[in-house]
Image (cartoon, rainbow, N blue to C red; front, side, top):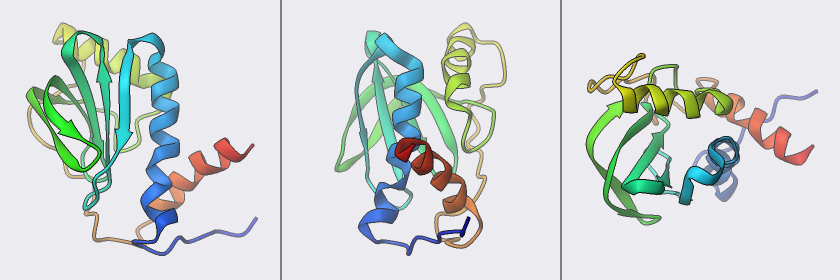
Length: 140
């Protein structure tokens, strides 16, 4: 199988995180009110949860959870009382619901400190190849 590098800032590159976000939305199920990808630099996505909470993912810091204040596909999402979920940049989708429950309960590995796993400016660091795994899942 050939490794496919996606050129940065193409439509395909901008759309890559959607496949990962979609898997997380599936794992969260009925708890999801709405979700969207965007904006860019870094690539990001928001999942609005029932009860006024939201999850935000970005390609530098992974997931954070908090109370939704504002945001839409064209603007960065603002959360109040945000806590970053531990587990890495691409936390397994089936692990996200438990991580959210732990953050709500104040247990587990959530933190107010923003981790920085990578810079969105590092185009050939292997991250896009990891995202391609979720694209391949969607194509299967």
